[in-house]
Length: 155
Image 1 (tube, rainbow, N blue to C red):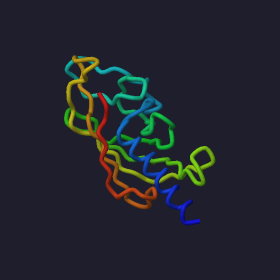
Image 2: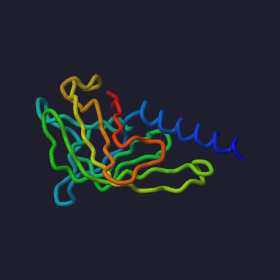
Image 3: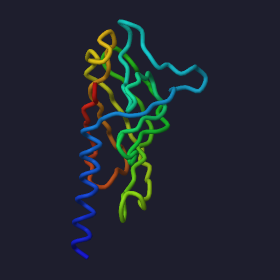
Image 4: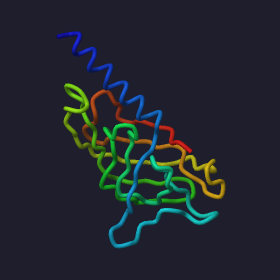
């Protein structure tokens, strides 16, 4: 029984490390009343880059674990999207991978999302993208995660 617990913990850690290393993923429009904004104009606000290398502004949803989709952000409501940072409240939906990821259960946690450190996007140098995401869990949080977690975002 103890071996199973260690194996489970190792698998969860591996998924979380993978999510941290791969960074961002999918996105959708932030407000249903406005059309989707997928590309920012030159010199305008930074963008968020998804798993398909598409630029997004104020996405309502965003996949954190591009490889397997076992962690994603949803119901994002942005209170700020500016030249230096962006802030939203939403939900982090995470697979507990128990007993393994394909048979796991998804759990939803309230989260505050902060994007910052905008830098030039290497694929599209005329655009800037947010290079870091910080998640803060004001209430419950996924097992094995701190209350505040910071991820580098890919470019």
